[in-house]
Image (cartoon, rainbow, N blue to C red; front, side, top):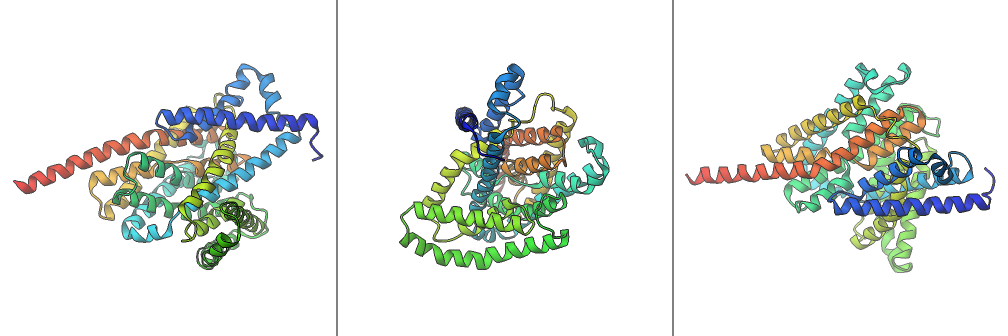
Length: 424
């Protein structure tokens, strides 16, 4: 790639400006309608992409977002950095102490909410590959693992926002959901890194068993020794550097170095960003105010760029397949709900409370879209499957809050009936 000429620089700057503006406008609209801003940001990308703008005026779409040229390559690089940063702040939301406090409730809920969707997705896609338009029989194993992992992951940032909106974040049930989602995040991304290696997306030369060992070692070291070193270093950073600029710079340095390290050893860069985010966010010297600054910086600039980019180059109209969309939504809803419900019941929660946990755990989001984007770029899945994943994510976000609210209403009625029964 050569240097960007005058026209390409202008085009790149216009792309970034239009993407951030559209993300903000539609994100705010979604927020006013009671939905997470990410829904509006994805819709903004669909409108700017071939689905809407390309259908109305293809010349305008190709002028704004050319498929070739240096500006497109640079934009792709910025989007890649955005993905790394998004996983970094997702990791910062994981509080390991909270996971331990919930004990067997979180352990049972997370394991069943992970295993049942993973197995369900794997079995269905492995024995019925035509349902998801699998192109090559050679990819069947990796493809089946991909579908299973997509169904099993829970969107920690989205469910945290839903719980806050329902005023149940700090309740026992809210803590069980959050702790379970944290466990699934960590386990899910270990599985994810293995799948990426099997997809050939890793840049290293390690075999799959070596990748598994390297992933586990990196995770263990970073969450023990690495976390300890960060905890010892942050007080010096806060004393020696201007706040908050110094802390923000150190956080970005750690994020990019960890991402570069995992990319170098053959694990995808986003996994390194996620794990270093967990280690940094769990430090007692990383204040909530500092976390909020990092979140605001990434969520309002880089996050919208990624979510808008989802719809820029995929036609959601021509690639909408009702069979694939329906199958994915039904599998996601039933398997996740069943797994989380069984786990919560085994953990000691009552029937309707367990049902609320199940609906909460069924929220999908950022991670599934990132996983789908990488799978699409590698040729593992078709654009139809990718579109179905994005629609499944949006549907799960839209239905999680009202279904949780209804389940909690039933739980309160059940509690009231039990109290009346004791009095009589």
